[in-house]
Amino acid sequence: MEENKKKFEGDKRDQEIVYSKAIKAGKRIYYLDVKRNRKDDLFLAITESKKKVNGDDAQISFEKHKIFLYKEDFEKFREGIDDVIGFINKNIENNPSEKEDGTAIEAPNRFEIDFG
Image (cartoon, rainbow, N blue to C red; front, side, top):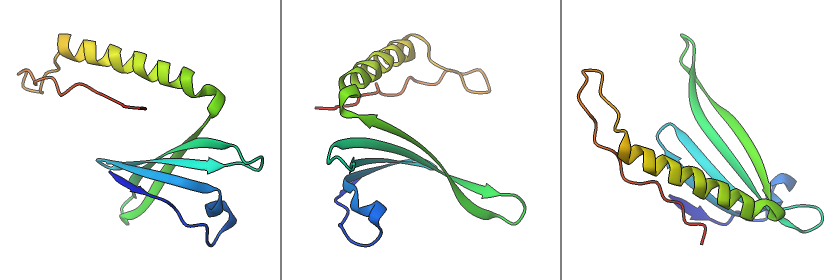
């Protein structure tokens, strides 16, 4: 994981990012960007960037998906994330998956997110 503050230089779009955290996960990178809107309110922009290799020419591109989370929704979002992560953790422990040859795979460590 990597933390950094983006400098207020260059493109006007970059100037609205006040804090950023990148989370590398396999072929994906998740960017958690704190941005400031025109009214000077802070909000969270979550971007998933996935590396894609296109066709026979092996040209690399990145597919990006974004969601925006505003401060009035933070608590509801946190409650929802906690709920689904709890569900996943409960079901991982009760339902280990199987390899292609039919042998069981050990359940991975529990998922945890600390919004603290």
